[in-house]
Image 1 (cartoon, rainbow, N blue to C red):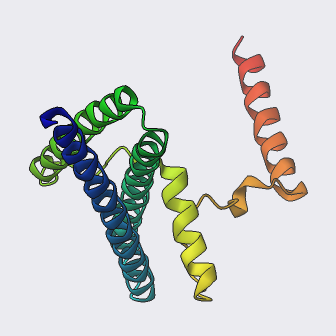
Image 2: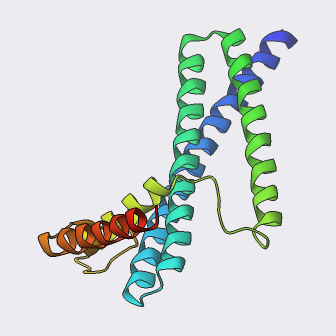
Length: 176
């Protein structure tokens, strides 16, 4: 009988953990929305670097949210099947990932003073910033690569370049 009670306690603990993961996921979602609003405010003030930092934070919160949801989903599917071995493996995985997230968070906090570049891909940051600008109807350049005016050659520029090259070639021939 003591063994059954032990399993029931573990199952209740796993259910509680699953709910806790969902709660953390919702918290990350709210924090992501807050960061997006901060992106908007920074862009309105012309603070593109600040907006980039808020975009990195929003992307990080989105990733964290998805990780919590994945773990909760795995845990719940294990609870519904009653496969205690799978539950144990899922919990072990959760513990490892949670410890890794804590270590990464501490490392980021300690290294933030020395570095502003994080592992968030530049393309994702630019995309999120552009999305926020579009959502709020902001007409602002967020530092995305734009075609430069000088990148499109004109006939006038080609003519000048050809004249310059012809002149230099003639000088070289005169020397030789």
